[in-house]
Length: 133
Image (cartoon, rainbow, N blue to C red; front, side, top):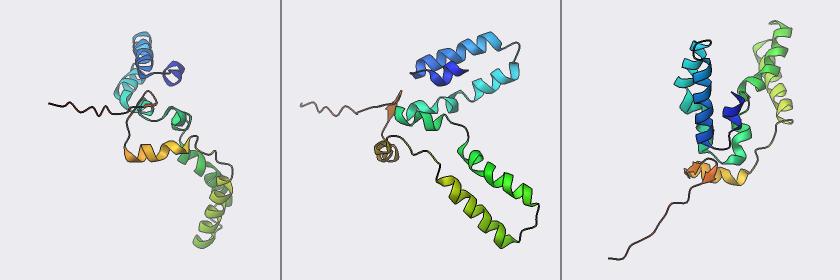
Protein backbone atom coordinates (compact mmCIF):
# COMPACT_ATOMS: atom_id res chain seq x y z
CA UNK A 1 0.00 0.00 0.00
CA UNK A 2 2.92 2.33 0.61
CA UNK A 3 3.76 2.09 -3.10
CA UNK A 4 0.38 3.59 -3.92
CA UNK A 5 0.91 6.77 -1.91
CA UNK A 6 4.59 7.16 -2.71
CA UNK A 7 4.15 6.75 -6.46
CA UNK A 8 5.28 9.85 -8.33
CA UNK A 9 2.61 9.46 -11.03
CA UNK A 10 -0.99 8.29 -11.16
CA UNK A 11 -0.15 5.49 -13.61
CA UNK A 12 2.35 3.98 -11.16
CA UNK A 13 -0.17 4.22 -8.33
CA UNK A 14 -2.80 2.50 -10.50
CA UNK A 15 -0.29 -0.27 -11.22
CA UNK A 16 0.47 -0.61 -7.50
CA UNK A 17 -3.25 -0.97 -6.77
CA UNK A 18 -3.58 -3.62 -9.48
CA UNK A 19 -0.63 -5.55 -8.04
CA UNK A 20 -2.11 -5.37 -4.55
CA UNK A 21 -5.51 -6.53 -5.80
CA UNK A 22 -4.02 -9.47 -7.66
CA UNK A 23 -1.77 -10.49 -4.78
CA UNK A 24 -4.22 -10.18 -1.88
CA UNK A 25 -7.72 -10.62 -3.34
CA UNK A 26 -8.13 -14.10 -1.81
CA UNK A 27 -6.63 -13.44 1.62
CA UNK A 28 -8.06 -9.94 2.17
CA UNK A 29 -11.13 -9.91 -0.08
CA UNK A 30 -13.11 -7.23 1.77
CA UNK A 31 -10.11 -4.88 1.97
CA UNK A 32 -9.48 -5.33 -1.74
CA UNK A 33 -13.14 -4.59 -2.52
CA UNK A 34 -12.91 -1.40 -0.46
CA UNK A 35 -9.70 -0.41 -2.24
CA UNK A 36 -11.26 -0.96 -5.65
CA UNK A 37 -14.45 0.90 -4.68
CA UNK A 38 -12.53 3.93 -3.33
CA UNK A 39 -9.77 3.94 -5.96
CA UNK A 40 -10.78 7.31 -7.40
CA UNK A 41 -10.88 9.00 -3.98
CA UNK A 42 -7.57 7.47 -2.91
CA UNK A 43 -5.82 8.85 -5.97
CA UNK A 44 -7.51 12.26 -5.96
CA UNK A 45 -4.39 13.94 -4.58
CA UNK A 46 -2.78 13.57 -8.03
CA UNK A 47 -5.19 16.29 -9.20
CA UNK A 48 -3.58 18.86 -6.89
CA UNK A 49 -0.14 20.53 -6.90
CA UNK A 50 2.65 18.13 -5.96
CA UNK A 51 3.76 20.49 -3.19
CA UNK A 52 0.43 19.92 -1.43
CA UNK A 53 0.54 16.12 -1.56
CA UNK A 54 2.23 15.74 1.84
CA UNK A 55 -0.69 17.57 3.45
CA UNK A 56 -3.37 15.71 1.50
CA UNK A 57 -1.92 12.27 2.27
CA UNK A 58 -1.67 12.90 6.00
CA UNK A 59 -4.03 11.42 8.55
CA UNK A 60 -7.37 13.02 9.21
CA UNK A 61 -6.60 16.59 10.36
CA UNK A 62 -9.97 17.01 12.06
CA UNK A 63 -9.47 13.85 14.09
CA UNK A 64 -5.98 14.92 15.18
CA UNK A 65 -7.26 18.34 16.18
CA UNK A 66 -10.04 17.01 18.35
CA UNK A 67 -7.95 14.25 19.93
CA UNK A 68 -6.55 16.85 22.36
CA UNK A 69 -10.01 18.18 23.11
CA UNK A 70 -11.51 14.72 23.54
CA UNK A 71 -8.69 13.64 25.83
CA UNK A 72 -9.15 16.66 28.09
CA UNK A 73 -12.96 16.61 28.19
CA UNK A 74 -13.05 12.90 29.02
CA UNK A 75 -10.86 13.61 32.03
CA UNK A 76 -13.17 16.33 33.37
CA UNK A 77 -16.24 14.01 33.16
CA UNK A 78 -19.06 16.53 32.99
CA UNK A 79 -17.94 18.71 35.88
CA UNK A 80 -18.06 21.68 33.52
CA UNK A 81 -20.94 23.94 32.71
CA UNK A 82 -21.79 24.44 29.05
CA UNK A 83 -20.13 27.85 28.99
CA UNK A 84 -16.87 26.71 30.61
CA UNK A 85 -16.76 23.64 28.35
CA UNK A 86 -16.97 25.88 25.25
CA UNK A 87 -14.26 28.12 26.65
CA UNK A 88 -12.01 25.15 27.41
CA UNK A 89 -12.48 23.72 23.90
CA UNK A 90 -11.72 27.10 22.35
CA UNK A 91 -8.54 27.53 24.40
CA UNK A 92 -7.37 23.97 23.63
CA UNK A 93 -7.86 24.46 19.89
CA UNK A 94 -6.20 27.86 20.06
CA UNK A 95 -3.17 26.35 21.83
CA UNK A 96 -3.02 23.43 19.37
CA UNK A 97 -3.16 25.78 16.37
CA UNK A 98 0.23 27.23 17.31
CA UNK A 99 1.94 23.94 16.44
CA UNK A 100 0.21 23.33 13.10
CA UNK A 101 2.39 22.95 10.04
CA UNK A 102 2.00 25.66 7.44
CA UNK A 103 0.87 24.66 3.97
CA UNK A 104 3.78 24.41 1.56
CA UNK A 105 3.55 26.49 -1.61
CA UNK A 106 0.61 28.60 -0.60
CA UNK A 107 1.09 30.44 -3.89
CA UNK A 108 -0.62 27.42 -5.50
CA UNK A 109 -3.84 27.93 -3.52
CA UNK A 110 -5.29 30.64 -5.79
CA UNK A 111 -4.80 28.28 -8.74
CA UNK A 112 -6.54 25.43 -6.93
CA UNK A 113 -9.42 27.71 -5.95
CA UNK A 114 -9.68 29.03 -9.52
CA UNK A 115 -10.04 25.47 -10.78
CA UNK A 116 -6.73 25.14 -12.61
CA UNK A 117 -6.19 21.52 -13.67
CA UNK A 118 -3.20 19.56 -12.38
CA UNK A 119 -2.08 16.19 -13.72
CA UNK A 120 0.36 14.25 -11.55
CA UNK A 121 0.95 17.42 -9.55
CA UNK A 122 1.97 19.54 -12.54
CA UNK A 123 -0.17 22.42 -13.76
CA UNK A 124 -1.81 21.85 -17.13
CA UNK A 125 -1.63 24.94 -19.25
CA UNK A 126 -4.49 24.93 -21.76
CA UNK A 127 -3.46 25.21 -25.38
CA UNK A 128 -4.99 28.42 -26.71
CA UNK A 129 -3.89 28.20 -30.30
CA UNK A 130 -6.10 30.03 -32.74
CA UNK A 131 -6.12 28.81 -36.30
CA UNK A 132 -6.63 31.42 -38.95
CA UNK A 133 -8.98 30.36 -41.71
